Image (tube, rainbow, N blue to C red; front, side):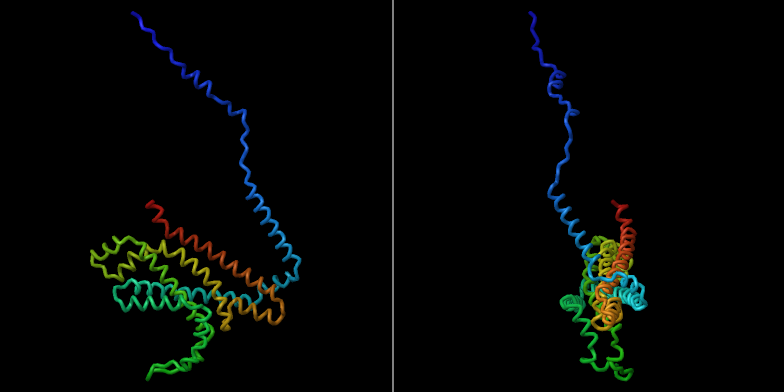
Length: 292
């Protein structure tokens, strides 16, 4: 007795029925009308702003004339010197404070906490003014039997600015350094302790080199910020870029022109430092990228 086998529909016929000719359709990109409108409004506002400055009461010839004036160049040099010295001391204060903060010694720990609390909690301009007027509190600085000097003779605008900027920077840098030290795996600390390496030596040779990948980017940003923060030293008569700029426009009344000169110089310095920072970051992150 023969059995009949049911005929199943052909798979090819099913595919032919569900096949669509995509060549007949046109791909239309989605229109983002909100983005287009916002971009157009921003460009129009920028054009209006540029036009206002171009046709405003600004003598652009004075910008070029004073851009390389000797007083301006001296201000640029003084700004760079103060930034490098203040940042170097700030990093030193920050590293020491971070180590004290993480110390098991409660006295060192709370001294570090108090230092960061005071200098992060008060305005920098206030600290600069306090250092500059220190002679009102301590007329003389002396060590009995060794030396004695009038405070007003040594607390120059340069020294007051250096102390104010560096000590304030150290309070902020200490938090950056502490975060970098905490980012290193605890196994590194334990390995250094297991081979009998002293704590400070372990920090110097093992922990800090590994923490630099985390520490460097924010410290680089802080240094770029320090370039601009030195302008506050003009309040205590330190002859940095902004102070010399003000001295010139007080004499010739070309306020906007001289402010543009100072702004352009700040942009040049910050741009150069930003390129240097990016190269340093790539250098210290090489090992991390290779491990990934």
